[in-house]
Length: 464
Image (tube, rainbow, N blue to C red; front, side):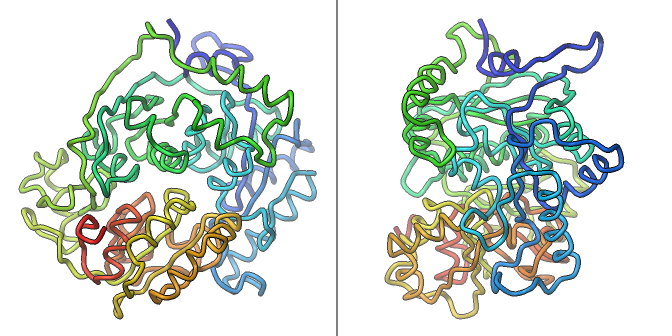
């Protein structure tokens, strides 16, 4: 009668406080440079050591520049945060994937690709997009800085147990429709608060047919529906992806792990607090038109005529359109754009670069478009070069930058100027998210590539 979420959660319960939270054991804590300094300082002040240092991994990603990483960081705030993380990791005896090392990249890309994130685990990080790691069949969620300190000190966290939701997507995705489009579609249907208080299990034919990269993208965006996290039951796709990874079990331990992982599924008679079902046939390539990820449309559709149609308050609807410079009822096809960003923990994996390259091959970047192509890790960068994608991109006048969070958020040099339009494969289109006054249109790598070569918002299916 149990859901997969129940099974993983219950296995990690240390104790339940009457009329209070659950003390939950945490298998893996990831730390980056933005949300960890106060936690480390709190540990120092109290004279504490990390309880299980071998389960904590540190990596700078938000503030790292995506060019000239071998030189000192120019921005003093970024430089201080990156240096502070390095010192804290050393002082507390923690594994540190330093900038400019082969291990570095975006923590939510590196964790799965190193086999640090494994099925059945509980995983936390001081970053909302920790839900990404749910793609391997883990319960993964973002936490606050005080909670980061709690996990450092005790390897446990106090949490109220979320409700469970299952989202089933049936059918076959059409050509040109990706996991990113599925996620943007779900957000438009549920709105950005539709899954608040829930942990989401994704299921159905569409989900089973997604690659691991696609699953990571889908789980990454769970948070944008308000969910506490999202995850997918592990299967043969998961096992094939994890086998041989650096930190994955080896030999006999691997066989034992897989035998256990195969039990990680919701029982046939499991009861969820909420069940939703969608059809793949209703999903086309998507773009956002507003200032939250739920304000999205199919690429051939028009912006909603009314706030009610957009499932949001009138004032917020109008304010978003004014900020974006769009009007109710207009279409975005053919709209001129200025910037294209491929990357982030949402779409910075090898499959995303393959998709982008498939569109730009034999074409040229539009002359007035600035394009930032940023791998999610050095391992992705290496694979791009092994597969010759770098040559395809170079011939089309694109250059590959160095790994980091880049233009997902304006914490580094890669900022979109005020008033400019950016088609972005990242996860958030809030006002100023990519730079003060910047205007963000969220999209898949295919839609981003189509815009990059035409200079306007273009249906990628016309270029495939």
